[in-house]
Image (cartoon, rainbow, N blue to C red):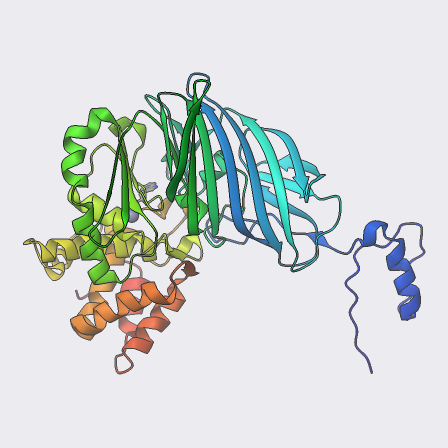
Amino acid sequence: MVSWRPTITCVPRSLPALPAALPAALLCLALAACDGGVHGTPGGSGVRDPYFPKAGNGGYDVGHYGLTLAYDPDGGRLTGTAVITARATRDLSAFDLDLRGLHLDEVTVEGRGARWNRAGQELTVRPHDDLDRGETFTTTVRYSGRPETITDPDGSEEGWLPTADGALGLGEPVGSMAWFPGDHHPSDKASYDITVTVPAGLQAVSNGELKSETTRNGRTTTVWHTAEPMASYVATVAVGHYTISRSTTPDGLPVYTAVDPTQAAAADRVLARIPEIMAWETYNFGPYPFSSTGAIVDRPADSGYALETQNRPVFPGAPDTATLVHELAHQWYGDSVTPRTWRDMWLNEGFATYAEWLWAEDHGGPTAQQTFDKVYRSPADSDLWAFPPAEPSSAADISDRPVYDRGAMVLQKIRQKVGDDTFYDIVQGWAAAHRHGNADTAAFTAYVEKKAPGEDFSAVWKDWLYGDGRPARP
Ligand code: TRP
Ligand code: ZN
């Protein structure tokens, strides 16, 4: 007996209900009557992230974003065209993009006008023709308006942040949808070309490498190219007055730093250590995953936190060395190996915090074990023990202390068990195994177990990674 499941969701209303045993030939006729051979279903409004269920979208995978932006700090107005190249992962009659605020001027798919509607952050696009599973398609969205500053569940501000002399686009965890439409979930990484036009006299700095800068009719256009996969939450645009400095590391890696002139005195001294920090991190974590490095330093009031934006992290004021080490370590752990969902944040913050501990250990400070011991002495009612690092209590907690410090403690527990040789083999191997990809906590624990087959990690996972409260023994 032949078992056959038709993938027809469009049955013309004029046809009577199809009898169960309808001959295949008649079904084909019915199909042909569907306008344009409609066979897809809508892609869906999220990817079931446990903390941000509406983030990202179903049914497609973005390969490339081409963003052409113009920003005028005086009016606070952004004009944008996003050209999004994606592959359908199933037959689609419609798909969603994430976009907050802004005015939509036009949406086309494969060059034809598309119908669309908006509900909250979901922009649902109905292409003229259905998309076939496996098909690569291009969506162009033209938009404009004053981009929003988004307040996170934890109260921090992201999205589009107007600054003293321009603006900052910051995306963790869901801010990027304030300045371009897209599949705004860390699981869908893509390459980017970002072009920004600003009034002459201002600079526009973004991710990747600078391809061109031209000034015409009182406006400067800067073109940035990011070849390696990038999660949208680490995409950035910084508009303002910056002192630009370009150099190369001894390894030949381009360094591009942009510093607000009011921050230069303090920033220049610490940013001069980028080549040294990159060399130390490459030695410890393995080959650097991107084609350039650097930093963007704005004023202290411009953002409430530093962020590991790809290639060049953003800092509110000159960072201290530990913060620079932290954000550059994220390029391996976070930007290259990216969390599968926002639950896996400790894989970012635990590693970046542990990088600070290791830096101190290698530069005349306390050993990582001494830092661990000191952190462990936090009283049982401390915020540190509020929840296990692998299971933040809510979306408001994904950047809280347990994710950072207790996440780093998990790494120290692994190091205690396996010793330095295997430990460095694990941190480098982990970065290599998921380079430019995504990974979750289960993949990490499985990886560690594979690298140290003789060891039993069950108590480490149970007490330190998943357990509530302060573990009984350090
Ligand atoms: N992830 C950033 C870092 O560790 C910090 C950060 C970004 C943050 N957004 C935040 C911290 C919101 C607290 C709240 O460098
Ligand atoms: Zn961090």
